[in-house]
Image 1 (cartoon, rainbow, N blue to C red):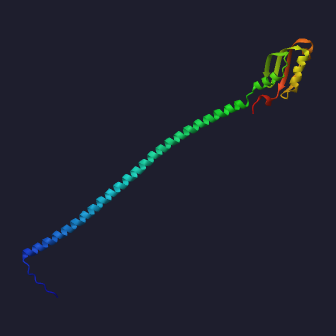
Image 2: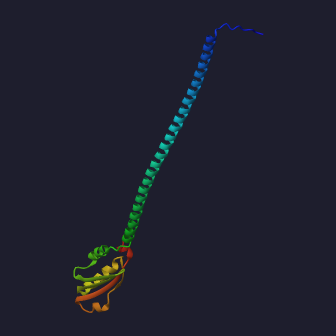
Image 3: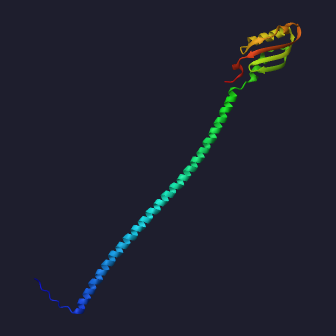
Length: 185
């Protein structure tokens, strides 16, 4: 066993006890201060994390709204393109069924003799009716023969009543024209 002798005066003992209590209080204060710093650091970290998430979410929302605006713009353009394409299809259908009578007139200009003049032309589908005047019967027969030689004309009908007179013949003639001769493909 150990025996200790306490030779310190009571005031010094009090001072030592007070100093130990003071160190103990300082230690606890340091621990509490450290815990407070950790707590506020944790709160600050959570706050920063939540703010970051809020920014990300709001940026996503803004980008979603921008994306939806872009989608709407693209949709508008697609609708415009669809409308334009349908109009082009309509125009294409019209032009594909368009009859170009200028081809007929060009061919007629080459085969009508000088002494034959046409006073009227009427059409129905691919049938053509001519009315005109020929100087002589031979000129009228030459006109009919020229029409027969042309590949685009068929079913040429010149009534015999038109051939009765020898000169100054008023005639009527009808024929059919082939579709491929007056349509562009």
